[in-house]
Image (cartoon, rainbow, N blue to C red; front, top):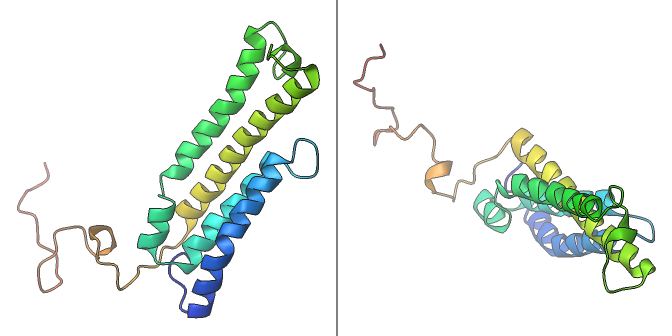
Amino acid sequence: MIGPHASPVMRVIGALVTPFVLMFGIYVTAHGHYGPGGGFAGGVIMAVAVVVVRMVLPTSISHRLFPPGLGLWLMVAGVGLFLAVGLVTLALGGQFLDYDTLSLPLDEARERYYGILVVEVGVAMAVMGAMVSIVDLLGDTVEDPDDDTPDNRPGDGNDTPDGGDRVSSEVAP
């Protein structure tokens, strides 16, 4: 169920825990290239933070914090970042994701460090975007009765004041 949770305790705890879950996901992503974790685990943890927001807060607030279409853009940007690093290493004469060919003004160990970090960030972005997009597409959005935006009103926009739908006068060919 996606939408505002009935329990105020769940709403408060969800809102308080979410920033810490997001921060932990960033930590796992940033330190995954030399320890446990990485882009996939960090991306899933950050997606969980967004899903918790979707589950406990009203739709208008959760969509303001993380718009529904942002997941797709995160996926595209993450895959693009991953491919950009790989294609740059190919263009510099190395193999795909061969960080030794990056030609940064750093020693070899730091070249690899920053190359892997950028790739891990790209993977985290792609995984987070994919997970949130899947939840948004499959989730059963519960409408908030207090939310009176046009997207959350029933009907197709042809509603009459008494709640019925107007019949279109156009005839299909």
